[in-house]
Amino acid sequence: MPPGVLHIPWRERLDFAWHVSLRYARQIATHWPVAIVRALRHPYPEAVTDDGVASILYDTSMAKLLCPTLDPPDEVRFAEVMRRSPGARWAKTDFSAYEGLQCCEGMYAAATVSLFQFGDDGRPHLRAIAIGGRTLTPADGEAWELAKLFVLQGAGHHMVNCHHIPLHFPLDTVNAVTKSVLPPAHPVAALFAPHFRFSLSLDEAALYSQFSVLRNRELFIYSPFALEESSVYRLTRIGYAGLPGNCAYPTWRFSPKPEPVLGDFGTFLNRYYDAMLAFTQEVVAELPADDAALAQWADTIAGFLPGFPDSTAIRRDDMLPRVLAKIMWSATVAHGADHYDYGRIPIGKIPMRLRVPPPGVGDAPNAKHVKRGRWSDAMRHEMARVLFFKEETLTRLIDVRHDFASPSLTAASRRFVASLHAVDAALTVRRFIPLDQIPASIQY
Image (cartoon, rainbow, N blue to C red; front, side):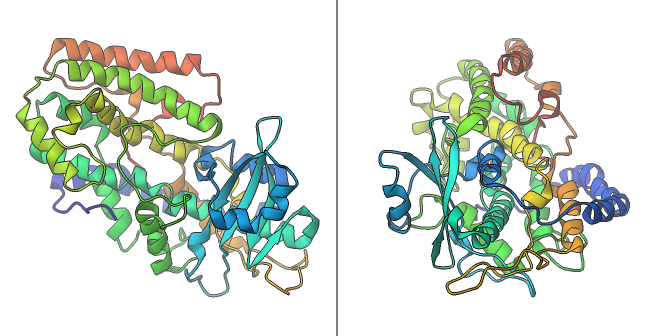
């Protein structure tokens, strides 16, 4: 995992407790009747068509789970399917990290690799699922239908516990070093100040609190996962450390530009990054070339985070404004869009818990009448959705006023906020989070 931040200032802890912890307590006390009613009224899990699976994994923020590259083992396991469409464009979702993880008693999960073919319509279509030593296709009937549930379960766990992780914890190093090394009046410190509020205390609570959702303790009504606590944390670690030899689980390294994401979600994210880059270019233009504090800042972070440019590399070309824009973008749009859009997918379509085993070699397909989930599983998932998965915006990006000492940078900050409205108005893709809901920092 990235370096943990200790000795968080007491003012930040109080700020987090007053605005975030109290919100948790209020929702735990008031939302459980709503969660029970919703759990009793809606199926869990819910059957999803083949195109529905593809849509969930392409038309939502979960598009970040789609990997456009196949590894050699994928080409072997899917060779027969791929031979039917020579020259086609392929992608996969790979949830191999389930190998070796332990499920809670009475619950099941499975490592899956799913093959998607891009059609003439430019969209992915589900063609095959590798699960339990078998490669299934739609011709496999009920085994295929069951396998899709395990794919969607894997997608839900990976979105929350694995692929979302790099948006949280690596930024803690930047946050802490910025506050420790840069003078408060430094333009970079002023730039980041509104975008670092709440984050250190929130991430500390997520990793270490005995009440964290990652603990997945049955005592808590918001514990939704099928995995035992140690396996939840292992999946979280894989989100940062990666899995060698599997392109779907890259080892995290800092990059000064957004990671590529297929489909409209990637387009949406890039538009906001471009607006932030234009702003940070104005900030950097006012920094002296021999800024000793900034050099120390870069060297300190580079000593902790792989890929972060040191004081020499950060001054090359347009590296510095890109680094600043990437940090702002990660803490605001990228993180907020993950939560907002994921939190609106019906939980029955991305179940966390399944109560039947996956189709395996020689197994008879599970009959449709077998109960695959419980209402209590849905209730827990709904509680976790409201508490942790969906957005709960406290401070908005469009309300940000950077406390720059320079009048020209203050004017640039105002122009930046205006540019966000221009980006929103010019979007040609779906808004994965409305502009007025984009948070100013990581606050949920």
